[in-house]
Image 1: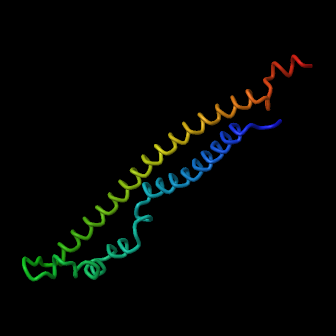
Image 2 (image 1 turned 30 degrees about the vertical axis):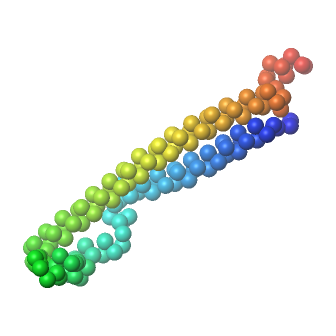
Image 3 (image 1 turned 180 degrees about the horizontal axis):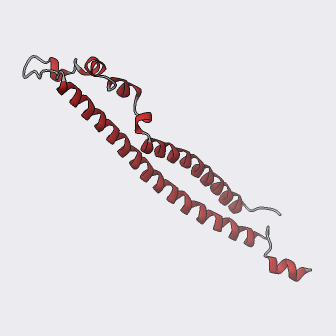
Length: 145
């Protein structure tokens, strides 16, 4: 049951392809969490800044557009502040979902490529095993007996 170099190479590539698939599935699982619960997966700083009008003001009142000398914009207050905070938070949630969908699409491509590499090398390993004599087809074993 001696293995050829080609067979060892093909099985090694198959092993690493399977390892990549396992890791990729873990990352896809996180993307699904991100897609289904974006409130949970957004950056903690962004989450905290959007929890109240006061927190929002503390985080963003010192932005350059509100503190510059020329063409200064007044920081919103009252109902405008609440509306802006809620709109910004909705935009962050939408961006998080979009990022999750992008991740799922990217990882689907990686999984497809992994599948191709695995199948090519699995067939190569089977052929190398048959050609190298390390495995005998069932017909030849039955004929020998």
